[in-house]
Amino acid sequence: LVTVAGGEGLQTLVAQTQPQEVLYDVRNANEGVPAHGEVAKMPGVVKATRFGFPTLEAAREELRKQPRALAVEPAPEDLAQRAAGGVLAYLKHVCLYDQVTAVAQWGAYEDSPSAGRLQLNAAALRHLEILRTSDGRYEGSVLHFLNHTSTPFGFRLFRRWLIAPLRDPVAIRKRLAAVDELLAAPAVAAQLRKKLQQLPDLERGLARVGQQ
Image 1 (cartoon, rainbow, N blue to C red):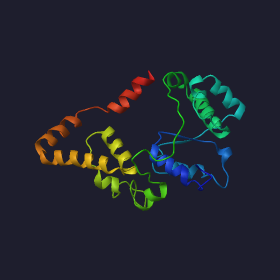
Image 2: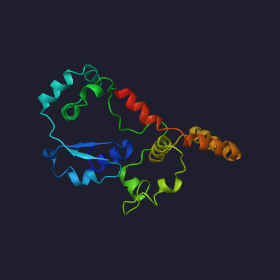
Image 3: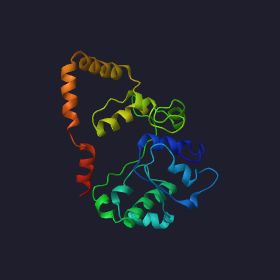
Image 4: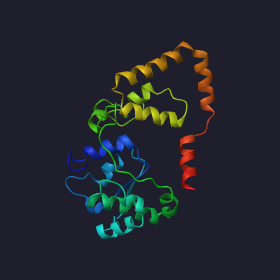
């Protein structure tokens, strides 16, 4: 993802997945890899942490302790094994290994567009100012202008919809029909909004429960 497009692939991945933390091995810094400071400033990066990834053999040793990871098809290549092993090593470093691996779901990452959706790359998101304006502000972006959500998890869902918009006409018509129903019943929509605003962040809460 990184070397093919000089970091553009990494920026797209970060924008689409919104990771809470990005692990950065400074030993991998070269002409095709963005510097740590550049990664830390990418839209969507909450935290960029410097961490020395293990050798390939050490990474494979970590992965042998996770049979569900090794069962993922197709078998991961060397860099993917180092990355996965590095994440496991980092979890040990921050004393979260047992909590996370007990409920971890392993699967092959698919960077192809989801069925029925467009996939906007980092350049499109940047030039169209979808998530941030040209000077890096949320205020004034397309997301800021269109956002009328009532909950944090609703905002995160809307954000995912915006960076991967529908392209299937049937799905688009269904969504527009749902919007029309809400617009035709403003009292119901207002009551629903009020109730939603009283909810806690269910998505984050369920994630915390899964880590216990």
